Length: 434
Image (cartoon, rainbow, N blue to C red; front, side):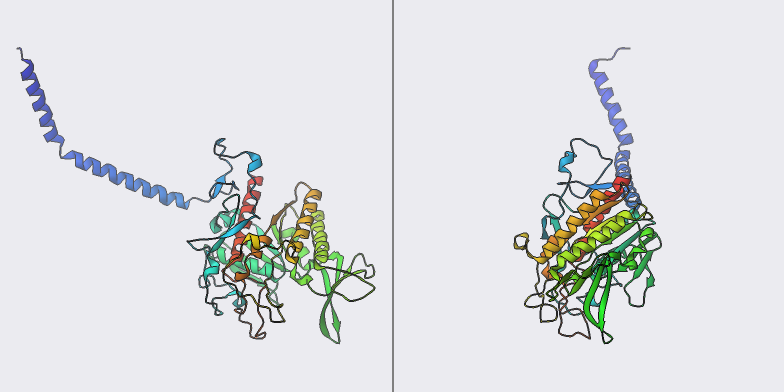
C-alpha cells in the first residue's frame, strides 16, 4: 500500500497530537517535582553545612574579605608572599551599620559592675558601633565557635594588671554567647581567676601581677606608702609558677609604673628610680622601668625549659584618656565618638610605653629557640583614638564618688576589638602547626 506525502504528514501530526494529549497532564507535575527537589536539596545542604566544624587552618589575606583557607593554592587568587602581610596596627575606626558588639550587657552575665557602663547610667551608645579597620586588609569579626575549636583542650592565660583582667572579661563575654563557662576558681582578693568551658575543654586564666617582676611596697607605721622597690633579677612567682601548664600567654602591663619606684638589679644598691626626688639617685621615666620588666619577663620565658610549646603574646600599652587632670585631680573622659589617626601624638608617653614593649619582644624573638614563639597584639594606636570607650563617671564605685575611670574600658566597647586581633594571630599560629 502506498501513501502520499500529505497523508503521511497528517498521520504524523495526528500521532504527535495524541501523544501530547496523553502526556500533557504529566508535564506540570514533573516541573513541580523538580522544583521541590531543588528547594529541599538546598535546605539540607545549608543546614548540614552549618553544622560542620569550622576550619581551623585559616590565614589572613590582604585585600580579601574574611579569612581564606591555607589549603587554597589558587595562584591567581593568592597575592605574592611579600604582599600577604597585613599591618593590623595602621588603620581607623569605621562605623559598622550592623553594630560592632557581639553581646550586650544583658546577654553577658559576667560583666563586672564597674565595666557595665550602661547599667551604671551611661546614656550614649554610639561608641559600641565602631570596628577597627586596618588600611591594608579586612580584619574579620571574632568567631567564638571557631576560636573555641582552635583552643580545644588548651589554656589561655592573661598575665598583667586590671586592664589585662578587662581584656579577659571581654573575651569571656564573647565566648559565653555560644558556650556557658564555669567559674572554677577565685582567690580571696578576686585577682586570680579561672574559667572553664566544659564542652570545648578550654580554660581562661587571669594571673594578676603589678610589675611582672617582684615588687614590694614600702610600709610606714603599718600603712602602705604607694612607693615600691622593684627587683629585676626576680620575677613575680604569682604568674611564673603557672607557665608550664599554659599553652597561650597574653602578657601586658604599664599603668603601675606611673608612680615612685626604686629599681634594683642583682641585689645592688639603689642606683635608679622613677619619679623620686633623691639627688643621689638617677631618675628615669616610667618607660625605662617597663622596658626592664619586660626584658626580664621575656628572658624568663625564653629560658623556661618546662614550658613546652608556649606561645606568648605581648599586648601593647593601653592608653588612659584623662582630660584636665588625672584620676585624683578631677580628670575626666566624656567624649562620645572616636578620633582619627591624624590626631595621634607619637611623642606621647603612651607611644613610648608601646615602643619599649616592641623593642623587647623583637629581642626575645631573636633569642628564642625554635619551639618558642612570640607575637604582638598591637592595640596602642587604635586605642589612642578611643577616648570615648572608658567608663568615666559610669563605673558605680560607691567608695570613690567623684572620681572618673579613664583607664579601663566599657563592656561591650572598643576593647572587644582586641579579640579580633587575637583571633587573627591565633589562627596564624594554628596554621603554622598544621
